[in-house]
Length: 327
Image (cartoon, rainbow, N blue to C red; front, side, top):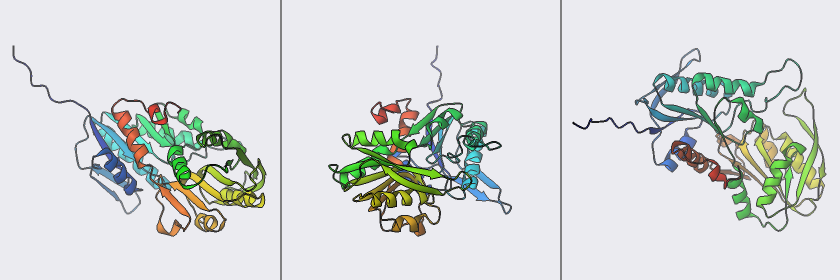
């Protein structure tokens, strides 16, 4: 009896990148020791997007990385088209990587006749053919439940906290939440700083006016202390800049802003540069153009975290192990 010549059917890791943030994809590929799969992507005159991969994707474990800066809807559509192309090309498993989850702030109805757009995005990804999602610091945790499949919700806390720890003395640090809703996140930060004290900003927001917040007062002791002001994203910078002003008026020493997603819509750069913060630390989940940069801005790479997550998913390992079991 002759032994059959079996075809090697071992799955193959392939990384694909949209056009929104190719620099991040290259960083992730370098961490993984692979190349980004070559593709043709172009826009038709009427705005339609065309994508074709230059290599066979049959049987592959495909990871589709796309950031979602402005124009967000264009990049979301491009990622959906890429996923559809992979599904029709017989990829074995398709994982959508969204470092910044689009429409995350529309996660519930505040009033009648409003959409839940974050759920719609999850449904679109599933319908396109995504089997799994990898994302970083969702605006609210419940968005994980919108997608009918595994969601790896990663956190940039370690990268941001390591930078703070290496740059500032922990002796006089207070962790500040920009509102009462993020106090639980602030507690995790405080634990990583050897039980640093907490404070938060009491604020009011007009539901009829987006991107505008009136910061009110500080709850907690911040006088003379180095305040680490945390948030998941900075969009127009109104909330954070107002919080810095309130902290300074309450007698705080240096104020350091730490956020995962630097959306930095105008006039965020001007506001942050002039708000009085000693440093603004963000990650590169979104591309930051030269005109959005300012002297006190520090950008950390999220690529090592994404690469380790991809490796664990590909090897059927434990993503939770990346958080020392505390995810």
